[in-house]
Length: 184
Image 1: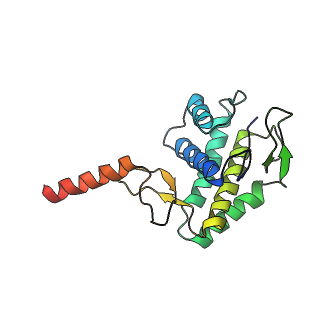
Image 2 (image 1 turned 45 degrees about the vertical axis):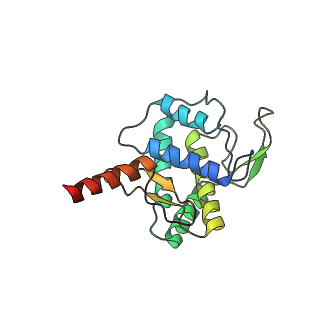
Image 3 (image 1 turned 45 degrees about the horizontal axis):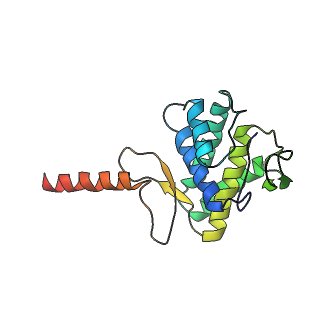
């Protein structure tokens, strides 16, 4: 069962949950459906307990949730991002509840239906809440799409300066290509 932490829950920050969401969105919305072990690897990398109950049938459903979360991260303005997140929460979220997964973890909040809710429900609800909290805390767009040619990855907005690239690798690759075009 997923350890559905959202926001400042289970010792994780809003940013940490949002980063886990962005990493899953990038993996699950890539051109090819990722293997189960890749999804489990992202979950483990973000501190989720070993996802032993994750099965191959979960991956397409999680990809569907990831595509929906991606739309909120890629909204053109704050009102649209908020409307998209609100729609996701209205559809998928349940009243907040405390859980310790029957004594296996410390107490934390979930907004999915139950401890054994499907992974896709967990991803959609925890991701939507993290994005909503970023919007509320920062009063600006929560993320964007990498500006590097050919890169489709999303990123979270950070700091005061607008971000354009998903990674320093994409930023460097773009700058080098532009330099070569000017010199060539």
